[in-house]
Amino acid sequence: MQDFGTDGTDPVDYPDFIVPAARAVARGEADRAIIFGGSGNGEAMAANKVRGVRAALCHDVTTARLSRQHNDANVLSLGARITRTEVAVDIVRVWLDASFEGGRHARRVEKIRAVEAAESSGGGEGGRS
Image (cartoon, rainbow, N blue to C red; front, side, top):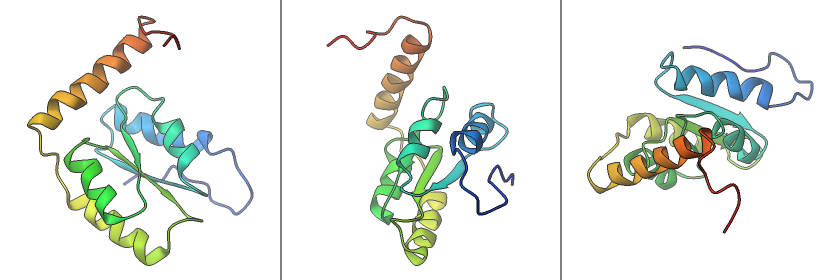
């Protein structure tokens, strides 16, 4: 287990801690990561910028379980100001125990990977709709 977090209580810029954790997952140095922030939103956004990361912001055990079973999420984002400690413990337990179901979900995850690959190679739509 690696800890990429801050060691103090002073405000920090969360990308400085989240991106290295996400990169460790993307490089295969860690199977999964759990990241924390005030709301968990910015942390999930930063992690999802790393190619190969599928970070899910979860507020309950149902979203945690489905993020693994249906989306093969490899990073769990939690909001420390949003989620009570007892609920967060349950979310982490369920998320760690859940497995990707594959099947129709594998096709969808592959489509997400294809978008990611196109965007990183400059072949994406570039914001056009």
